[in-house]
Length: 625
Image (cartoon, rainbow, N blue to C red; front, side):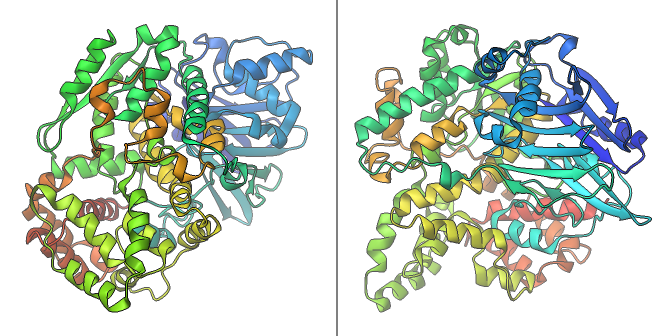
């Protein structure tokens, strides 16, 4: 796991400043290379995971000297790919996955990308062809940002693992991207190709991009992977066959992600997903060496005691990390420092805390991201059947339900389920695709239009999610999970996982997000992946290995008690967002912002997550550039 950066058309000396901003991603080594015959430079900061020897430092140059690569991530099936390459006569100088990826791409090019089981972003230069090619993994586990500017009539191109490195360069347009703002207000994250900076773009997952080294100009990004097209739609599957297929694929995924030349651990809760990783790892020799890290909340639901018991049963060391308070301004500063943009998922604060502690003993940890999407674990998926039933009622009755929901206060220990129930009832009788997105976002379209003063606020990203749902609507629950795999997973969960872990020089691996596993499971009908039991796909697959205490417990969110934490800072929150000096007032209707704060203060609505997102936006605006 590393940081990568590169420039075309810039003074190569600028690369040093970019790499300095990425040092946290790779503290073990930093290297750079200037490309002969071109105004191009590639740089790399290394976190040594596979083949710790200096021979695997990057940039990596092919034996013939024609090709140069900088690579961030892991290719989990690199051993199998290496064997294939060796059979064709290629000889290797290291045991790293970087060298395998270099030769694989030399031999196969773009056509070889679908064969990679991994998380990656890389830059690849062909000195003879005078081209730079960038690529990002299929699911979007590893980030890749780029900018293209014009200075003195010449194109300049640059790329990096994080936005902060690109902000080191001159001429990059740092003005606000209004499309990205609309997405942020709805989802509390931005979606590629947009960032909140007009001049900085994000390469979409499963895409590649080529740059001409002579001109500095890029071609439009191209897809090498389509999640929907990759799926195996087996409508004849049974719950038993689905569970067996999941078990085989998941054990393989976990086994590949336990390969490491550095210490390895797991973020362990009392939930099904992280315990499924332990169950799948039981046949691996690495299980005995795993460290485990568990979060403990001082208020709200806490399952740390059960997680510690599970670790003890498996004879694994466990470290419990307490999350008990929120220091308002330092927390805002931390989020914007990590993400380089506002980011509304407060769980990032928790992940940051765990990663900080885990980094003292590990360089690699496994996490359960993606389990809910594969195993139909979110309550909003189950709500779809109820929605369809209620929507079939006479229109006056559905209108009455929506009106009644408006007056239910969201307070006390049941504030979150009440909020979700109200979101659900407000949409009864409306189109299902839009309704599902309203359940899982923070502003519906009319409210977003009011807040931003934008008449047409349905962005291309939003419309593509609607189109995805409609393409899959013959099985609406499956459709909802696929929508989440194309949006919530890469741009919320995985963005958080990458930034919070790499801020502490630690690599997170997500066994549920293997492209092979997604291909084999996500196309299965929802009827074989859900029942009255929580996540039967997983619990059936590992019924003999999962602790009995976790099998039948209700699903609990990992989210921190952000409502409680913000209420303790309510006066400061109010001043921060509604004062005349607040920068957010220039972007959003001040009456809208005041209403959001007033509703939270009066406990009419539990909009604490949205307010936290607004606070991170305000801090980003105040920080400037």
